[in-house]
Length: 197
Image (cartoon, rainbow, N blue to C red):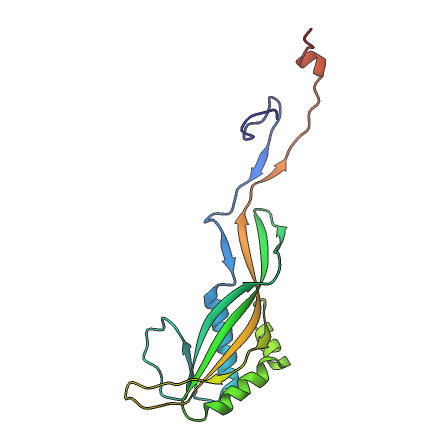
């Protein structure tokens, strides 16, 4: 194609490129989908009637105790990403360790905390999260501890804090141009570019 911008074919050559995906980059799974899967697992393992709400920006008053809050608390890349190509994108997969803070409030939550700790590293959690259709799996659970919590009425409530670690593979779809057709033509070098003496 010679020197130049690379967007123009040389005389007699034709280049066909696939159009990049509209809308730019797309990430999956979304944070909303990950939180929904984790919340569904907590609802499944905690006793009936225990509310599970977002720990930040939930814009609702806390439910009546006992209840749990769920907050994503950290992200750590586990390895270099791998990638593969589709017709219009390059798919970058990044394995990530996700920190998940679960706080349990109200009477009897110490027993509930023990249940969450016991089941997080059990096949029940792995099977449940696998069935959610996300590349999400339990990794580990860090130490649980009790922390002070005072209600709006200045009453002390039991509060147990558990830090779960999960692995999720985030996929970033990056629009990519591809040459789908590139014919090769031969030309006589001496005829097209005569030697200069």
